[in-house]
Image: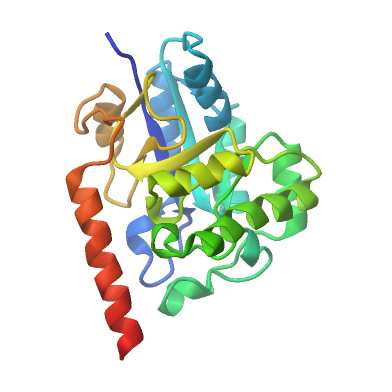
Length: 264
């Protein structure tokens, strides 16, 4: 039997969500209830890098293994999310958009584009405190729609910038929006990363693709009961090793929209 490995994906934890980003914002009380459920369920929370290493080497994973991840590198992670995780001695992996350190979330439209990002000192303090820091590109583009040379720069430069800031290796990458192709995965591997997180909204497992690990997006509508179902392998399917047809079809739709926007 293949063991499932739930990997939760959060973005923002705050009681003051930015307009337009409410769906991806979890209230601190809600986040706290999620974490308490993990503890009550005797889950072993691991960094994504550690979990990926088990998958890569085929080393058996402990019972109840899972991971908690955050995308983007928003400042509220340090103020709201990490204190709750640290108080419970739970690790987390934070994927940071390297080109916006100390800036605002300017890749997002409207008010959502004005959320404060962690700066270099804050990010270093989190890494020193035990947070695994991963790269999330330089500017958060749809990598699968970029020419490969531009995609390579986004992938390589984000690693270089974060390693210079942190003074330590950065070995995990998360695809912006979760979008990737085989060629993009090859670029990530070639840049020296040892794992990469996708989205997919499916359950990862011990035979998952270590360069497209499935994650489950946690939104403002996800309750403690929903978390419980996901941990038990209900409410989401196990990720296949290949991309679904609808994923490839969706890429064509996004490509057409982008071309249409440029033509205006």
